[in-house]
Image (cartoon, rainbow, N blue to C red):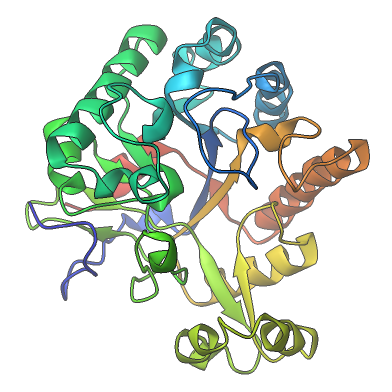
Length: 331
């Protein structure tokens, strides 16, 4: 099995049936609450936002969207989370996948460090043991086999693809194109495409990268220019304010809705068949992430989704799901 940490080979870009057109999915990194500004630790996290996920599920159903909850160990072992998400997953109104946060996922055979927070950096047998424990718990507690994976902190490693293949995972969505996490011990995803692509020649594992685009007159040179500005954030900000070059990830966390709609236009006009939206479940309640500090912030988050969904309908882009992707992708 080829590695997920290498860009795809020529000819690996996936193709979809003609009726698929251009679609989108909403992925939720469904996880515990913790202080993003402090070192990671095994204990001390919270799950107070779990009840708030019910509102988001109801909202998605009203919009005709099937959210994909990528759950980690604290969530899958939380009875309230199972009660809130389980009925929708069982009824096909939501889907469940795997998200591995190794620092809170047994077995606990490693030190909690920044390096080890990327699951792909762990010894292969430990990465496998943690993943399988989580996958089996999801199957037991939600009553279905998860088919999609996202590594916490986007932390793929050289052995991850084989682990996913052996566990029956059909889709990975850990590649965050146009982002570089190498300085903190993670992976550099800048050379990776935005289009879904096959990881292996047998076409058993499909990569669906998170969607991020460049906007502005210099966007065609963005892959070369933006990394050079990494050490000069004020210059990046200036170029964004001047409308010359802006990096737009499709997430309500840190991306204004006006920016997101520009990003949607660019992705669609470039012919991207699948737009992958993402955000973190603790943002569904007040005070757990830097993005939702008060009621106004929560209202803004829901307003963001309403406007984005409305614009996607206007542009004729329908929602899809893991099941829809696997049915439409040409093998």
